[in-house]
Image 1 (cartoon, rainbow, N blue to C red):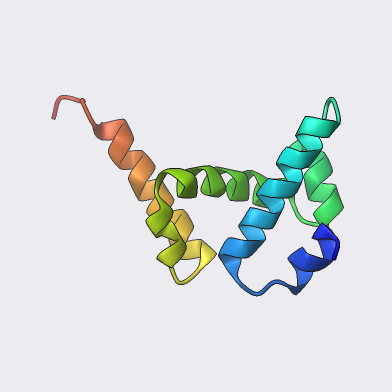
Image 2 (image 1 turned 45 degrees about the vertical axis):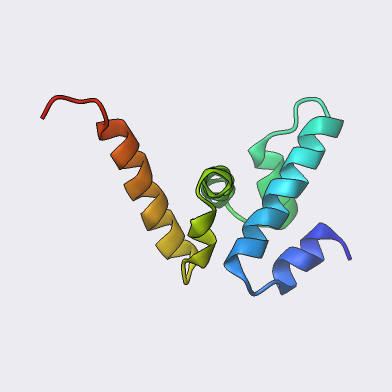
Length: 93
């Protein structure tokens, strides 16, 4: 089954993110100049959604416990908390 079809049939938020990440990386490795714009156009979604999903996928590789979040929205909130926590480390309070 093609990436597009799998993405639009998939119900699990985490699997949707993985499909986007795998497709985007596959295209970047095989086509010079591949961008998130092209990935967004392929899936028929916004550039912002692709950008967020790729950032979330990267964060999930570092913090696999994020896949236990009930939704993509919850995972994004947790990702932002983790990023804020990292940015505040080492700062004088």
